[in-house]
Image 1 (tube, helix red, strand yellow):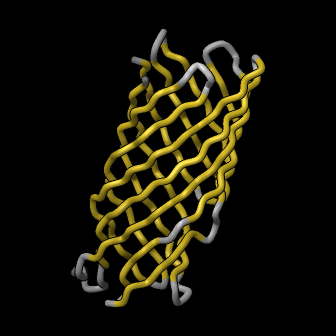
Image 2 (cartoon, rainbow, N blue to C red):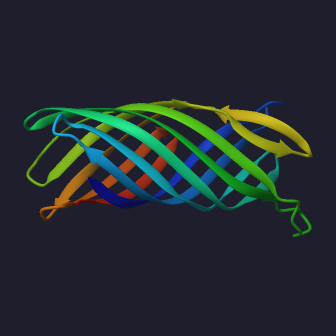
Length: 197
């Protein structure tokens, strides 16, 4: 069994029902717990908080309040030392409040922003002692539910993929530090620490 924590920032563009395009930025901090079998199959769950962010576009700005985020996932690693390949799949959801910052400096009413997300990905890399750099590719999709000028609208990401790189660093006998960066598609960066119990 392993436990850990991570902090992440993500940037993406959403397109909604009536072709509204808004740039979404979110910050999240999560706690993680999981289990890995000797067969290199692992499961994990994550639960945390959205620590703010923003939606900007169509000449308007919306601030995101604190919210909740959670996910479950499964992964399988194949290794032929020193090379490795990992496939993963997961399902996540988040919910936060949003309110518009008006030109007068006042704020509009709070409305919820809810997203459901299914993902699959693959990482490939090589181990150099305690360090394992890798390349990553992920695809994802799912609806986003929001309220625009009093009406319910549904949206999704304009890009349904991530391309990037990362690295893990073994710290002592039980801890691993992980840094993950996605530069193309949905842009994201995260840092996490996992400890084997």
